Length: 114
Length: 112
Image (tube, rainbow over all chains, first blue to last red; front, side):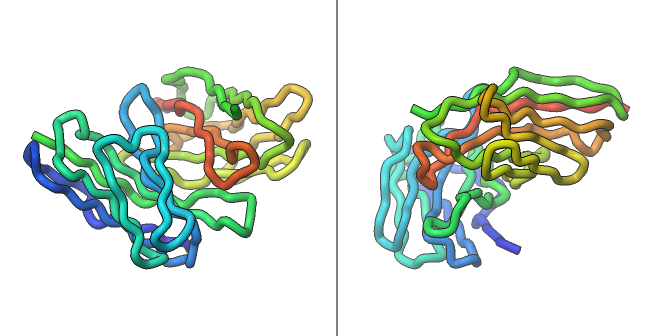
């Protein structure tokens, strides 16, 4: 079974702190994604990566950056956390070559910025 | 661009009731279609999928049929359980790519 793990289930940070969220997948997937999920807004794509060291902006990249140094690991970075970044963060992975491109999700990190 | 429209929730049912959650889509071509489920406090997981028109995806008693004529992929279950309480998302790969478009999600609450 595909497994996607995230470094923390719950995280509390202070405004202005630098925050790292890490995601690891064990199925050799090419693609990895970061979403945030907020009530009434559904899932919104922050960034995605289709290969090591490659990244593309999603719908809401402002205030975030990402890093993918190894195929299995995709990190989301909040350079200076703000209260409006309090949210549930979900990581996902999928194949590029082999369709139909269903995604596999991690359990999520609930981040609170105070 | 491609889009997915789901019925708004919450949908509230009694145990053993019949469930339908509507999903319609707008897409170029005939993409694969997915239903994901998110149980409380967890990430999304794939519930079922259909890869071409008239295909029926099924899993855990849930079914959905890919209807090209009506551009729909409605989720159904004949008899829901309390443990089915979750948020359900309809999705498709945008523009034939690997980047999905998700619906807003429909919350299902099942009472004993």
